[in-house]
Amino acid sequence: MRILFIGDIVGRVGRRMVKQYLPTFVDKYHIDFVIANGENVTHGKGLLRHHYFELIESGVDVVTLGNHYDSKNDLRRYIEQTDRLIRPINLLHPFPGEGSAVFDVNGVSVRVTNILGSAMMKEEVNSPYVSLSELLNDEDEEEAVVHIIDFHAEATGEKICFAYAFDGKVSAVLGTHTHVQTKDAKILEGGTAFISDVGMTGFADGALGFDKNTVMNKIIYGEQSRFDLPNEGRGLFSAVVIDVDDYTGKAKEIFPIYYQEEQ
Image 1 (cartoon, rainbow, N blue to C red):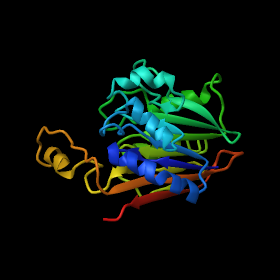
Image 2 (cartoon, one colour):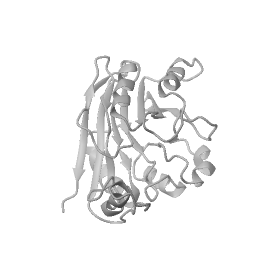
Image 3 (cartoon, rainbow, N blue to C red):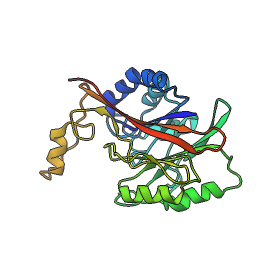
Image 4 (cartoon, one colour):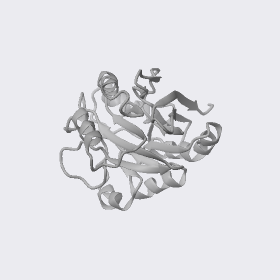
């Protein structure tokens, strides 16, 4: 089985990139299942209902979230009406929706789980390690052959340690959140695919998908300004392809996609 995981989709340019290029990548790499991180889809922060369905109509099978899961009140009203939207599993307080779900992909059961990291993140969450351990040990949870983790976290050290802790127990630990694709995609000894961060899908000529000047004003000059999000411009498509054994759930290959439109 081949799974395509798309890194954080940011705003209108990100949605356009998915709609325009996803069919090409699915055909080129013979993809069976598409997962995408959608926490930045609506104006760079959160996910409105119609944008969720836009992703589904573009060919995404499952959408995961992250620290901006609750940035749009609309999500609370529709998340339980969907069956392909996964919010973080380790939230401290009750929240609608599910943090993990199983899907049938050509007769193979595939579980997708979304987890928030705890290092250098503003959100207070339950331990990522304990939360996933409890899920894996829960006898009431449906077992799946393939298990893909979207680990939405800041620190690369936390991400790789988390992956090593669950090496051989899940098919892949894929980092999201930093919007910069890392060059460390690999298969760990136990057969778990890993990358510190899949990267970002959105505006290529800014900072993290946003207008670079507005980001610089805050990060460099300390101004209390909001990040502006371009509605058009050159796009970037960041993703990884994971080849997983249908019978063992072990990853056989992982490789990145980093496609930028020409100037």
